[in-house]
Length: 394
Image 1 (cartoon, rainbow, N blue to C red):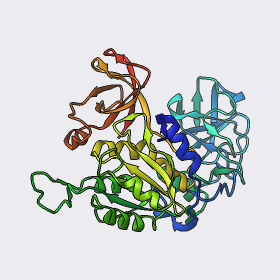
Image 2: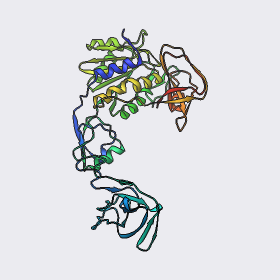
Image 3: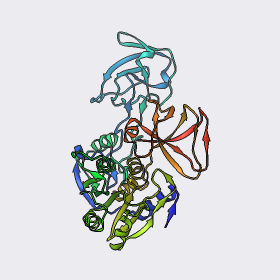
Image 4: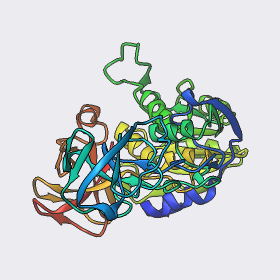
């Protein structure tokens, strides 16, 4: 048995899993949520001209304070044909090119105009209220690096540099195999001793959020033939996720069946709660994760450990773990020794967090009510109200 701490388990996954998905070209409108497979270079200087950042007047800073002759106007999309001479100003709009001769822009709020004269009763510094040419990027600069996750700002930048399509990493196919004799599908009426298959549905959502393409396979029953069949099918995908069957029970046979496929196990226990009995390894050239079967354990172990593998495969060099620090609304204690992830409610501004009432990692209702998880450090036992604690965003 190989047992790792939480951080060591993440490090192990990121070390073993390397970018491997190949690339494809997608239209810009379809690029959000994908991972760049190429460096993106600026096609020209940005801005390509000295650009006014304010509505006001383009002036020579040396002429202020004073009264100036307004010799013209320039707005975004136009170029002023003349230049700003001594004692002159040009009315300018936000986004317009700075006229030759001007070295500052005075905000319109700081001026008073009468006819073709404008009075400015304050000084200005050279370079004030405009963006010099090339200050954002120079032609040829890398403005987005390969491995960047594309969001709305990145799409805007891709459009800015003239791209209509972009090379991205192919999305990994992720097979999801729920296990257990007690599980029935969501549309079935369970008997008193049965539960519906919620893990496959929640994992599919988490896989999509990580950039993968989920494929839900039939339930693997707690016998050798059924489990072997579904693992065989699952290893045809790029990644295999199994939920359940990895504890120490008599019918927890997932690891034994994986061993029949020549599996190499990197770890099979992590010092976290929920989710200690978690398996990570490789079989037939494919990575697999054996996640615990309780819904909370499945969600937490995927989000904190397995997700990193799917992101690494797409070229994300350092997969992020979205944590912040917030202040507890009430005292909190736990038994030291494990990193614990507990359902919580984070305030809308992120300033405070309240532990949620939960009856264990099988309490799906509590998981649905929470919007975050407290992260209790393994070396600390207690926190007072007002103390800061780490929070994992849901």
